[in-house]
Image (tube, chains in turn yellow, blue):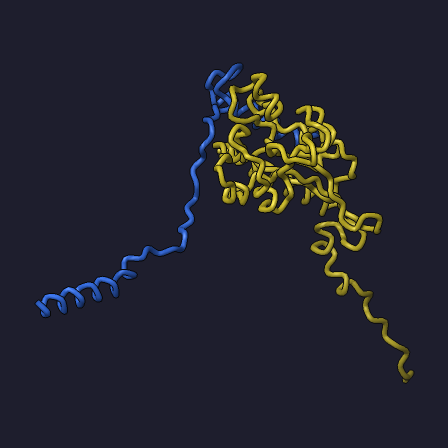
Length: 214
Length: 74
């Protein structure tokens, strides 16, 4: 059975924010709510890395554990979803989530919290699939259309992968193998050392120093 | 008569002394809650799959492999 996961390759992410834009456009997400965002570590420093973060659909989700009204559920595909009709907007899930995935619309006066909104893995929510009610509350249900999350499918560099965790692992493993085969500065291509020996073993043979002539 | 009073007093003292023995533990036992919301339907329940999980699985598998550019270009 598929166990839906996201995987972001920091070697490939170019911080274009295309995933963020696509998500907002696909689900018509209100201003101030970001189901997905790109985080850059060591911004501006050579060797900076960017990663696209949203709900990671945890196998043992802390948001589910702390919710006082038990509005979270996990689908058979491993997608963590919630019922907005039950949510009271308390924000416990936001404090529990290590990724900052739960979002709260600030539509009311004095920054009042609305019902929680988060990445649905493009799987909608507990309303009839592809109905208007589902779209209004949770966004589009691409999974029911046989498609994967739009953020992953439109990623230009294919840094962000989304889908069955086992398949993603295979894709990533193959990618890393190709990457290793090319080599990187400071790291020789894979197989080089096997073929030519370790760098420290590749010293030229010692030239005999001039000894005394007999 | 006085013996009855003494026995009654002793009985009251025993009852008073054991009164706290029936106190319930006040530490809450947290239990994993059950989902209280509406039931969601399977992603393959509606059109165009109409409950055909095999077809839906195949579609998802194809989309999954579309993310593998090594398979797309070779």
